[in-house]
Length: 187
Image (cartoon, rainbow, N blue to C red):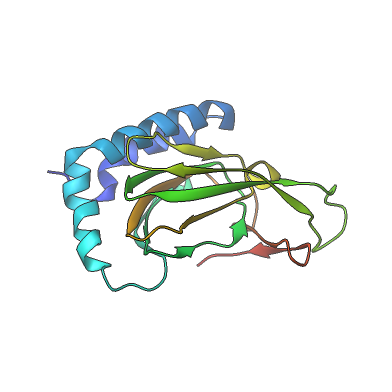
């Protein structure tokens, strides 16, 4: 039985070296297989369902960073009623649901990006993701403005993989009520 997320490192490194248009379909297939793997579910997902029983906010339960920041793999725990703010990433990304269900909302940017700290957004679509549904993918920057959360009544767990960053920041956070956007740096 595999004990760590490092078990997947060789394939993830190969995917991270591909151009975005080639990496996204490969990482989507990889993630769909990963969250369906009984060893992964037994070692990484089931223990989290018990551990996070009393959690009040979403969090990253496990993280594995590839060599030279080529990629990062994160396991997110989503207690009922939690979710991210609207954001994007400075890399391509993909995620798949391993337990429960999560809701993804995607946004289109309506302005041209010429005004600092200003962004007008419009919700483009929303989709529920559950185990067996495959993986959602996002492009870097304006091509992947989204929000993920669990507005349902029970715990959810999702696995996210991000490719290499394309710049100094990790992404941007958006507040459509104020047409506001700001850079985000994570530790």
